[in-house]
Length: 320
Image 1: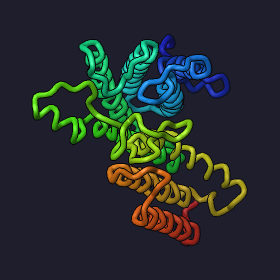
Image 2 (image 1 turned 90 degrees about the vertical axis):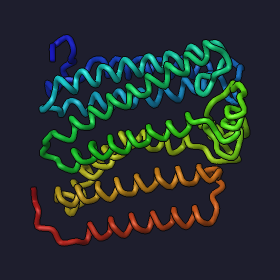
Image 3 (image 1 turned 30 degrees about the vertical axis):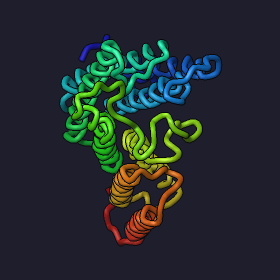
Image 4 (image 1 turned 45 degrees about the horizontal axis):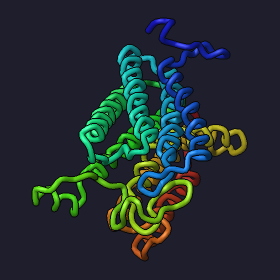
């Protein structure tokens, strides 16, 4: 790595990955611009404000860039691979969001839009860029897995966070596949203007939840996609909270205890993502769960709660 490619942390001398930092800054600016667009631009696409999607993607990728830049400070093995993979991810992310913004400015849908040759080309390009982002993030996950760190709970939180995030990204593959109705049109030799969908059992332009835009009358795969993606932040945040609570609770001062609690948290997070996928695929709105969904959620909460209690009560002689 070169000095031009890194930014030194002012207090510790630890360096941050400049392209990821730049990505986070650009996405933050875009989020503010999109927020202004939501206030002054009354256009809609598929029933949602035209600037809502750029806003959501900007916020999500600002967190993505900032989180990975923070994680890469800990990389000692495979620095060159990590730097280039993160750079590719940052460039591909900026390009994908740029495509989304360009379509929003035109008042056109970016995802699933195959109405014209241009729209199809943009959508295809976005799919290719998404694959590049996934592969780059996968390489970064491999690099993180070979690292060593004194705080094993924090390290494993990053490892599991990246794996769950990669899994959350893959939910997008399911959304990109033609629905049953669309497939029938294709089989009959018809021409599609839309290929793929967020919602299951409801139209993408149907009633939606405020702020998020998620389907209010049917399943929505974006929920599991969103939750899975942000394991990248949630699980390291859990490790950070446990470390800070250790100052107040002596039991958490034991590293092995924090590591086990992070493992329990990762298990619960994976269970939550799986539950949200299952609920969406059955065409069920997030806020309208049936008995099976409620029972599954209650079971997951019970298992996680009991596992956490067992960890806190289990005798441990580990002190380092």
